[in-house]
Length: 553
Image 1 (cartoon, one colour):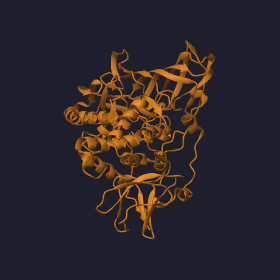
Image 2: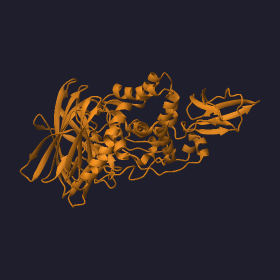
Image 3: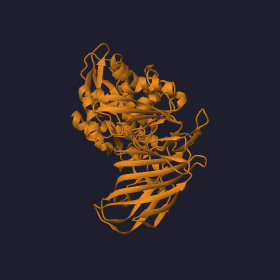
Image 4: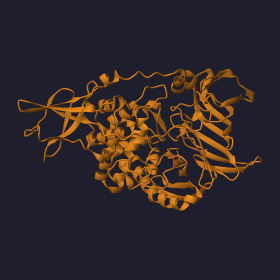
C-alpha cells in the first residue's frame, strides 16, 4: 500500500542531531494488552499451522451487515488443548463447531480462545469452523484506515470493497491474524445481492444463484496468501482479459471495472500492465502467482496490493492521482497505482514480513521498484533521477523499524528513505548484474515465505560479499541519516562518519571537482583520504546517489 505523507524539504543540519538527544523530548510510546494479543506470537498461536481456509460470507449491503463462517484447517505443531484465533470484538462469534459439536470459547479484546475436549497431538491435521456475524467497521478513509467501504458508483449502484492492511483481516473475518503464518490455499465464497458481482483473489471457480435473492461467487486461491490480502470487491462489474507471455509461460490478465470506465480501462491498463510485468520480471524474477493469475479490480478507494487481485482506484490517469511524487517529470509517464501496487506482488505478497515492525521489507523495495520501472522504460539515468527526486518527501521523524510484537508499523520514511537506501546499496555494490541477481535471488530464496529483517540483510550480505548490517541498522533503526565529516590537518584530508550505530562503516564515493569518483571505506574514526589536490572548495561527495549529510570543517 502507499501512504500519503506530507512533503517537506528538510534543512541539512537536521541530520546532524543525535537521535539520543532528540528522543529525550518525545513521550515514550505505550502499548496495551490488546496490542500484545494482536501482535505477539504466543504458544496459543504457534501451536497450530494454518493450511486452508474456507471463508463463506454473505454481505447485506443495505444493512452494512455480514454473516457467515470460516473453516480453519490446521496442523498441530505441538500438543495442545487451547488456541487463539482473532475477530474484532464488534463482530459476534455465534458458535465454534468441531467434529459436529460446539466448542466453548472466551474473548479478550479482539482475541478468541477455544478449548478442545481432548489434546490435539503434534502432527495431527484437524479442523474447526467459526460462525459469526455483525456490522463490520466502516473505513472512513480507505485504504489508510481499515474496514469496509460502502458507497455507490456514478450510476447509483452499490459499490463495496474491503481494505484492512495494518488494522488486520480480523476486522471483517475470523482468522489467525498474524503475518507470520500464511494459509497455504483458500476458498473465498462471497454472497452478494442478485445483479451484483464479487471479485476476490485467485480464480473464479463457480457462480451460484441462491434462493434468497443472493448470488455466491467462489474464488479459489492456490498459492499461500496473507490474511490482509484477502478481499471482497462488490459492484456492477464488467470484465475483459488479456495474456502476458512471461518467464513462466502465459500469465492470464483479468480486469474488472465499472461499465462507464471500460474504454478508459482498456487503454490505461493496456499501456501500463505489460510494460510493468516486463520490467518487474526482469528485475525480480517471474510473477509469483501464475497459478492464480493477475487481476486489476476497480475500487472506490485508491488502491491496495491484494494478492492476484490488485485494487485500483487511480481514475485511469498517470502519476499518483495526476501528480508526480518525484517532482522530476518521470512520474507522470506511467500509472503509479498499477506500478506500485503490482510491485507488491513480489515484495509484500511473495516475500512477506513476519511482524508489522518490518514493513520496510514491503514498502522500501516496492518504492524502489518504481525507479527500476522508470529505468527499464527510459534508461538508468531517468531511474536514478526519479529515486533521487523522491527525497523531498523524507521526514526523518522516527525509526523505520517499529517495536516488535505489538502490531506496530514504523515511520512512513520506509517508502522514500527506504527506496533511496536500497539505491545506495546498489551504488556500493557497483555491479548492476550482481544487484539484479540479488533482487531475483531474494524472490527465489524466500519464495512464498514470511521473513525478518535479519534474513533479508543476511542474504544481501552473503550474495554481495559486503557487510551492509551497520548501514541497514542506521537507516532503519534510527531516524537520523549518517553525516560524512571532513577535516584538514596539516594539509591532509581526513574523513569519518557521524552515526548512531556503534562501529558504523560505509564505502562512499568522493572526488575533486572534474575528477573521477573513488570509493573510500570509512568508519566513525577519522581516516586519511588520498586525494592530493583536495581543498575545502573542490571536495565533492556523491550526494546524488548517497542519501547522507556532509560536513566540512
